[in-house]
Length: 283
Ligand SMILES: C[S@@+](CC[C@H](N)C(=O)[O-])C[C@H]1O[C@@H](n2cnc3c(N)ncnc32)[C@H](O)[C@@H]1O
Image (tube, rainbow, N blue to C red; front, side):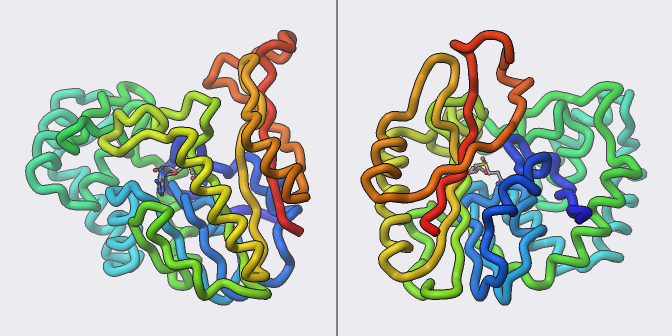
């Protein structure tokens, strides 16, 4: 099956391993909650009666909400007009910096999307004052034809998704029951995702967040709904013992996912450095 790729190139996105994790997803889903949706690769590629995609990063959520409000044609017109008006290209750093200053004053979500398209590694990086501070993606990043194609295909799937920008503990999961499904892809305690470090203007991720999430997943289980939970159990000689103990105690199932962590200096030959990505399910 051909998967739709999010037009965000979001750090930590699940696009490359979509087939591997969806293999374990329920066949029929009533309501789905993608609790840490990020660039939305998973929600965009899952069939369900109703989908709620949530992420604490409200900058990203506002972009998706604006895409929905504006619709495909107006969004694309606006992106093209913005690129032309600000003279954005792969080589003009000054134009990028001028546009970044402009965005940091207006905070327009579509401007943020365009800015991200021309930025280093397509990342959403903010300082503590919530100003976007990602550097220019010189000679590499642009709103190219691939991004345009991804954006067009995304619009075909967007109508069925609602968005919220809440801390995961504030998402109302009380309505989930038999036939419903929650997917949780939080920051991983052990790895190097930059949303872990609190530097993107959001709080970081700690052991107490892991514990709170285990509690929430237990609750989903008690309600008779299904969940799938992505994480990393081993990384650079470290192990997430609490996670492993929790899933064993509860009798949940663990599936190993093959993911090559090039960005985190993963060395396949060095056993000490093995990163093991897992999917825990309650079914
Ligand atoms: C591994 S990424 C998710 C990637 C996503 N599955 C995708 O395919 O793009 C983890 C996400 O958790 C979000 N996050 C971090 N802390 C959170 C919290 N307390 N509540 C909700 N979302 C949070 C981050 O903003 C980040 O987008």
